[in-house]
Each structure stands twice: as structure tokens, then as C-alpha cells.
Image (cartoon, helix red, strand yellow):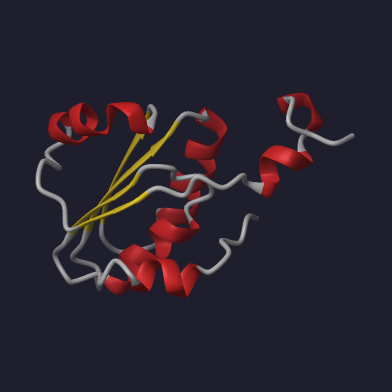
Length: 116
């Protein structure tokens, strides 16, 4: 499982509020999204976007037990506005875009990112 680096600092800067609407534009393993939902206290809404269908499946599994509304979409952050508008997330209280590399991408040689 991927563990986000600087999770508390990153999500803390979003100033998550109950009933807020948040966008995780690089959903990955769902670590940041999970913390956003926890801080929203079960009343928050989260839109998670990722290009990688396997990352989306992992994130969906990780987030299913956390209270709140989660919508996941396969896409990329170049289309954020259109994706958010189409899913009812036109007004957002916070946006997270983690442009770092996931260790899961590096660990799986068949993905083409490995040092193996």
C-alpha cells in the first residue's frame, strides 16, 4: 500500500470543512483522499481523478469504508474543469494535485517505470 509523504501537512493546508467539496486530481492509492474524507467528518464530497485504471480500483477499495461521498473518474488533470462540472463539483472548497511519482508505479516493472 502506498503511504503519502507529508500527509498531514498536505491535507492540513486544505483546511477541510464538514460538507465541503474537494478534488483529488491525482487519486493514486487514495491516501490523501481518505484523510480529506476523515477530516470532513462523513459529510464531505470528494471527486477523485486518475489516469491509471488500476489505481482507481485500489483507491475505490480503500475509500469504500470511509463515510462521505466519493466519485471517481478515469481522466487527467488537464480536464479538471470539465470533469468536475459534469459530476456536480463546479464549486470546490479545495483541490489537491500530487505531481510526485508513486512507489507502486516504480515497483511494477511491467508498467515501464521500474528500475529493474
